[in-house]
Image 1 (cartoon, rainbow, N blue to C red):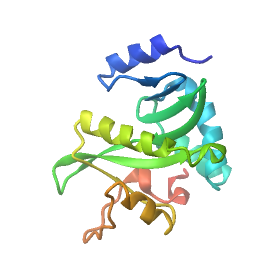
Image 2 (cartoon, rainbow, N blue to C red):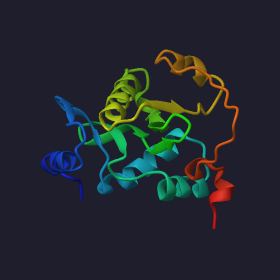
Image 3 (cartoon, rainbow, N blue to C red):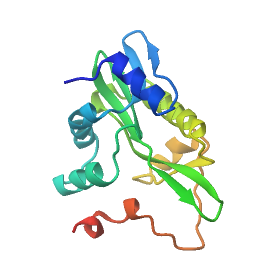
Length: 171
């Protein structure tokens, strides 16, 4: 069963997160446990990952209330997972922009821009000092540069369990 808008608002207040952004039949909101199956289907439409990888992502990375979705007429069109990490070197929390995607049939309408902007606002509101991402392909670097992301070089190796190659996550 779908979670009602009132239930979404209640969870949003409880979690002390920014309120739902609603415009007519469109809204950006935090994901809820009841969204998981629709998010899995959207992920499979957007990424060419195998079933084992999809399963690992939704077991190890996705958490209700740590992902934003763009919804129109009660249909999820876009999502971004926002796991949070503590970065020792900078002594701050950071939001990891992960699995940002839009349904292929709905691309080119500015949905990703709205969702990424909301993700930045969400991460700032929860106290993150910055956001980071790892583009899935070379062609995405120019896309993300429009949002002020820049390639970075890391001198020290840092292992983040949720970001390990999926073959290392299997147990």
